[in-house]
Length: 493
Image (cartoon, rainbow, N blue to C red; front, side):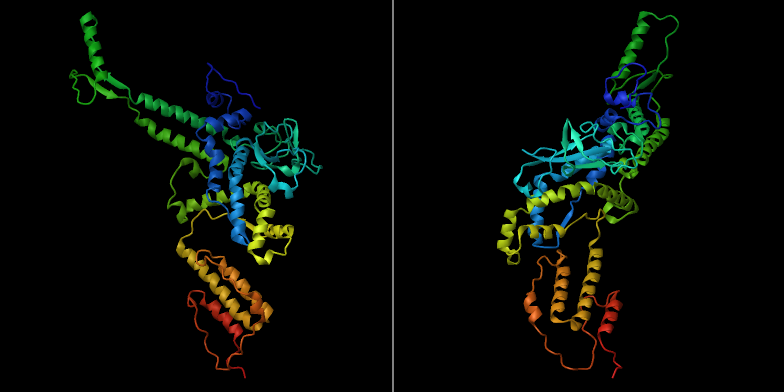
């Protein structure tokens, strides 16, 4: 951990000791205690570490399970996810990783040694817990190997905490930025990622100076300057008392009071007008320097409003949306670590027994086989940060539905009953994905459909197919092309 010395008299505040020190110059790196003090006390410390994570998690993931009773599986998963407070655990992990450069999440169970793997089939019966550890908790075990020929080069191979080793399968390590060869990180005690404060330590100090300037301006703005006529060379007691009474009257004067001064005297406030321009520019530049060094949009630090509103897709909104998408990708290993644990606990044998009683199709399917089918069909997706207008959603769905109908019309007459039933089943599944328009899925008897033979249509002169909804829209040419491929040429014998 880097040491910082103070010049002058000692100060009591931890933030002052760190960010008012003369030793901090451009390029200075924060140590563990420095990073902690910035996060706890600096006005921008919490924003830099937590705001991107809060924005990434502002909309929950959309869970889809393509195999099995989707509604029951999704509800059980989300209930268990909430029960173990998984979102907050992941937010703590990501936040500490940004503060120090690395953080670790481990899970355990009562009665199970930390250095042994836990059989995932037993997870539903155990009382599990999740702990998030900072670099001081794991100091010495996450230095990372610097041998370029080693299999674990710049990779961790386990975690030790106060003498206890955690099995590799029971820990998830998240680093802010990738490790660099032989680049030691003071705040993380190892050759690992870097703190979000590493490149912005000096601008953070500058921002504290702007806070002191604010405080000085507030204090000085109340100063009253009284330009009073000075007594002559010989000051007797009466003149001195009169001057003191006049100063007291000026100090105590408030609204609706009247005071008297001489015709050559005046009362003014301290002129601070010349500070506004340079000070505002310096503060704005300090914020932009912090944002540039932290590789995040300055808009998030400045608390500026978006040009046209975040939900309307302005240029600023697209930049922030792209940045938040990157944060979500960075957090993905933590979600991948917890998801299987939640699945095992949510879709446990008792839950599956209820599914078998409710849905006949699963009565003869073994639990383990069904679980892995559910797990393989698990599809979590993040919703877009920019809310798409309803009119645009309707246009997208219109194109999708017309393509499904056109493909079904083209292929259905050419297929045998088995494949025709599979095609109709596929079309039903795609229509059922739109929960807004079709809250209840269409369920057909596929066995009966396979056994049914449609009657032969009467021979007649080929005619235009009847239009379906919105067939005459912008992409109607695609539909007509597909229909032309299906129908025989009018000029053929």
